[in-house]
Amino acid sequence: YAASINTIGNALCVDPVSEAPAISAKGGFAGLSGRAVKYTALANVRQMRNLLDESIDVIGVGGISTGTDAFEMLLCGAKAVQVGTCHWNEGPKCFDRICDELRELMEEKGYSSVEKDVIGQLKDFSKDGASKSRQAKKARESLGKDKPDRSLQRKSSSVVGMFSPLPEDFDYKDEVIVLLFLAIAVLLADKFGMV
Image (cartoon, rainbow, N blue to C red; front, side, top):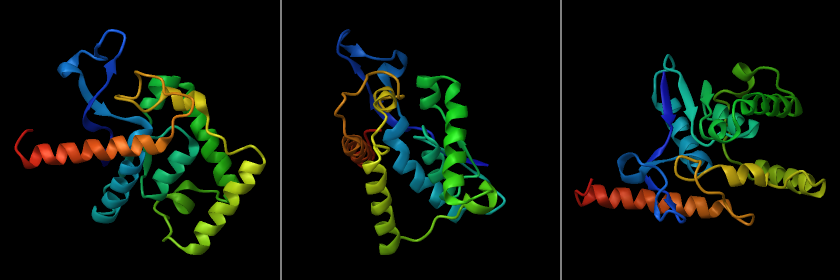
């Protein structure tokens, strides 16, 4: 099997109280994990599934904290998923919650088998599909069901996913910007021989 992606390297979390890195190993440098890496993880799982021989299972790792996250990873071709940052923050009860949420989502969609109905079944983008998604989101919002869970949001997605709580009004777009900035920094450092 092949696992993808776990963490993205060279992230640093600074503790403003102690004015020092939040972890001791490697001068505070660690891997970025949690929700901040989910979209990179999905892309890599999809690519690995497309490129690897079918006999090699892909394990989806990175940013899984809900049943929907697991569902998305499975759609991209993961045979199984790994939950790390969420477990660190929430403890082992997260596994039952994620499984229950995945089961509910599959029931809503009329799916009975992860193997047959979900794994590797990512559909191509279509305007019709995007329109249905927007309509469903509006329906959930009108029922008050599409508000982010701030308790999970505060607990996840910093360096190694565990150090600093996020403000109530934190927008995940900020995480994507930070992730892109880190990727660009790593590429530039590599290009100029600094790593």
